[in-house]
Image 1 (cartoon, one colour):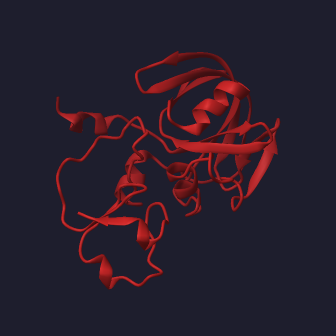
Image 2 (tube, rainbow, N blue to C red):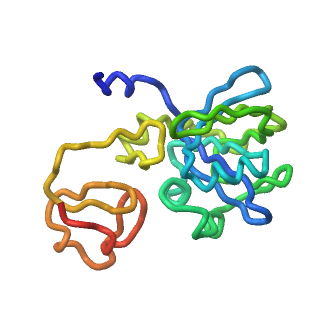
Image 3 (cartoon, rainbow, N blue to C red):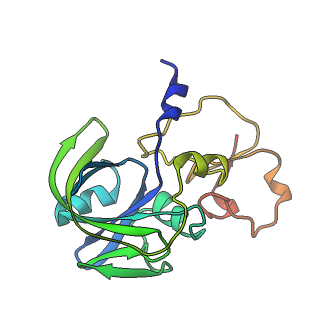
Length: 206
């Protein structure tokens, strides 16, 4: 199969957020589909902590991210786990119907799970939309924009992740998979991964 054809399917960039008891958590998702006027579906990897929390909580929010999204949001929600960190610690938020949403977003949808479908790697949650509002008049970020302009990569748990078996010369970020081409030793110790903002020490030589 030619995997290039999959890149022609349109995706967005969103943050799905929910609660683990009293702590808020979430992850970046690109597969959000409106099913009817008042329902939608999202796809989240089985290994994601957010998947577990949505199953327990039965409620989640979708924050629609814009092209000028804060630089901390995608690294925090896309490449770190809520099992280890408080994802909202440095992120401005508002609380709607007991679910935290990202303030620096176009807007949000509050959803209640009504059904789910298990695939080999992901859970597709089907949910009723309970509430929603516009917070900022901005341009939504598409997945194509994220890759071409932001130079972003797909986390291994993303539905669109395809392993790149082509070996490149340089250094690889062990957190998000970003490839630094060249000699990383020439970079100062303050260097961080441009995608997930992790320090120079997490890179491994290819």
